[in-house]
Length: 176
Image 1: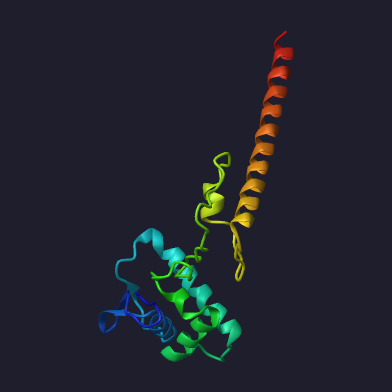
Image 2: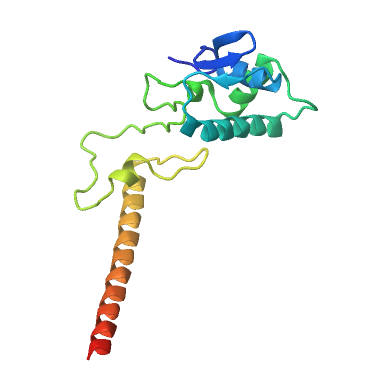
């Protein structure tokens, strides 16, 4: 559903007029210097969009270098597939255990697995830190990460409290 590799989802302005293109077609058109702008792109989105496209192109070029930037769709499509499998280029996937575009897969949980109520772990469990190829294999690992984050937060709070106490004591000494 909504495949960035094949579906024309990105609106662009070209010398021939506005049209919608897929991500590989966009990279090919950018290589041919045919893109004048994007339809629907807001001003605050321009820089991150540019950085994202440059990073994609640089990653593809690092893996499959060429003397000049190719202007054919197939090179860019194969390059994107070399970076991640086809599911990763879908905006939405039916199976949530599969990755989608800029979304990590959800791991299946056993019935009844819930984070402990004592942990403030909603962030840690919903979006744990990830590197390419890493996954949390079980609820236990997610729990461990959440517990570690909770301990770090507690230590930071304790340091803040002791600094505050010290500051108050120093202030009292100065006032006397």
